[in-house]
Image (cartoon, rainbow, N blue to C red; front, top):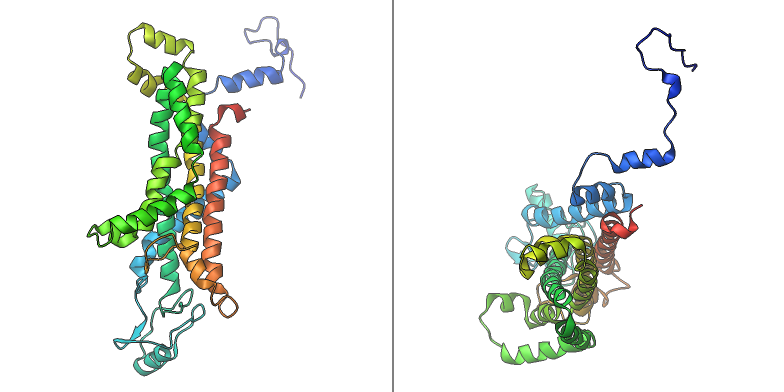
Length: 353
């Protein structure tokens, strides 16, 4: 399109004297765009990552299933299938959406439609779908509990060590090195043996429900798994604490606690978010593995690992009993890992273009 020439007596701007903006000037305009917060900017970048968004949708669906399924499904994870108030021995190892012989006779006789067994039943005539849902809930609770412990202990310990520095940092980091060298599996086994001896017959509802094995897993998470977070937070604080705004805060008389809470921790938030998100799948996999070898929750409460272990006996005859919990473990761990990678790409300033 040809630019019209400006009339000599016109007060309009001469368009021919203007040039198109260069790429560098366009980038400067992007920098000077509307203000936003760190979290909002990170979430906007996260929503542009299709793998992270897909993983987030999968996790939301899993959580909704855990919440809705116990309300909709008329079976409990420990209930044995009954017909007319009697145990249905024909409901053993049913396939997905299959009814037992007694259930089929009951429906033919009464015309009443029974709730289907979505994933069939196990060898104890219990609905398998609700047991997988309950096992998924246990695994997610363990993962979230472990990540909260790692977040609280690791951030506090790493902040104190990195901010104070000197001999305090030296001693605290040597303690971290000692803890880091301890074998977690061995400590879980030893704690389980000790707790079995000391807490046998305990009336504590948590111990009665979960068992001493799960209590020992939680204890080990609180004792050992925070060291990675502490190291990362310490490293970030060592880079941040000599910046000008930290020195200015000290100059105006701000206390160490206020400086850590107000100035240092917010600038480490990307590392904290990423490490916490990636800790959840690690804890879920650890719990599933321990349940698989018999060091998990107390029977009859299920876990994805214990369900997979129980399914090994009938692997050739009923392979789907192993497939359902195994696929659930893979799906959850993969979703958390992809979401953690997406959070790293969105919130880590070093990876931003």
